[in-house]
Length: 441
Image (tube, rainbow, N blue to C red; front, side, top):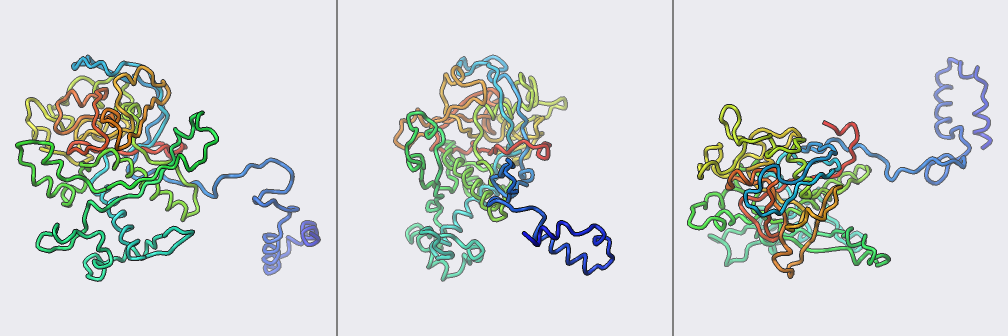
């Protein structure tokens, strides 16, 4: 204190001295000691005043790669034209949606393959003990895991649990068994924890743990179409580089959900290494969020590009679907197309109509529009394997390459079971990042 007291009262004329060495020495002393009387344990001035404490050291996350910002707004959710099925499962109502970031395209084969390889590498690294125990939990050394030699005999012996059993091999070739690749999911059920009836219950009751198989079901190309030759798609679609930028299919709702969980873990682990604030979770969009994003600001339009037609002025089809009575290749793609094919809507989102239908987080209930809130409408139910099929229905939106034009309308609702994979259903993620000025397009 005496030193600081003395330094803070050094006559100003000393600062005018041209002796560079003296000035340098003074600067070092001032930086080390400072002119303040003291600081608290949080690095704040010990002056008895309110200054606030930030939850983390840094916050500097750039625009998420491959995503576009969907600004908050209000729109009319529901039919923009006559309900040709007369199902009356949707009513037109005004709702408001908060802003979020959304993948510009559906998740591609290459992007989903990164997830599959991460799971494969993590399981192999655990079997090979590439890491160490930290507080009773094995922590993988990822630098070492990236050096795994998959064609090495010694490696194959160590990860034998992941290899196809002898009776399942062709010509005795030892390969990874896709059915053994599982992602270990651990999530906290906020909705259950928020219920009044659960107030005061231990946190452990709301932690949900499960293992989910991650490899896409490539057999859907054959299973979905009886008396139809589609074997080449089964053999090549997920494994051949020609389809790398095409939307991933054969992924059920559970797999799409854990992909979002892994993407969150992958991002936040990197942010923690950089000592930055972690972000909110990637997730599937709600039904309302999907429709709002698909409309691209056109509140009453039938399609993402407007009304009323599926062709532009030049006669070109505007999406990948089933034109006419079944002229599949007329739109430029026999099956799926690249995830960035055709023109984006006014928000910059590709293929919100056609190509592949997309999973949402919402459970399918015929009367859901009648009781959902008008602010960020949401209805969810994570069905267990023992629940009846009706409880496993999840809303899918957008129509696909094998659907007629009606399913391309932004308001058309349909569903699929959460444990079922199809050759025409994919997904895209959203994330609720703060809408700062630097993040707007």
